[in-house]
Length: 146
Image 1 (cartoon, rainbow, N blue to C red):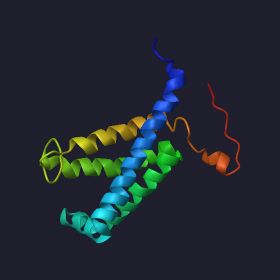
Image 2: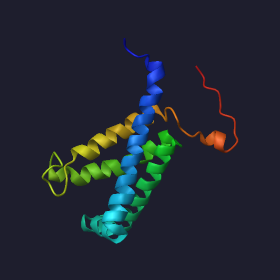
Image 3: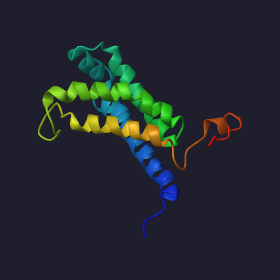
Image 4: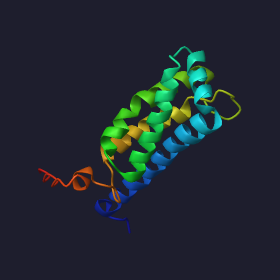
């Protein structure tokens, strides 16, 4: 028997949301700040022709996006706001070819897939187990229109 998508979609959206959030935290906090450090991240961005401060902006944006996605706050907006970062990462890795394995500068497939997943998340919304900012601020949610 095939499960009813009306009951499984919210959980699938939540699983995707939390997975993407953890990945953003890993890339922002663990990789960019923990492994490379803020100075190293900024230096890398400068070495590829971007303003070095963009490295700091991206690192902190990835951390903020990760927290928001895991919590399920403003998921559609956050997902769309990550697109410039993900498109930039795809373009940055494009010259190094396909497949991350064996390439010290990585391949473009991972950030390209991640870009598409962020569009999918924006379309799905938060799903189950998400915090509702309207409830947190004490505002009543507006009824959905058919």
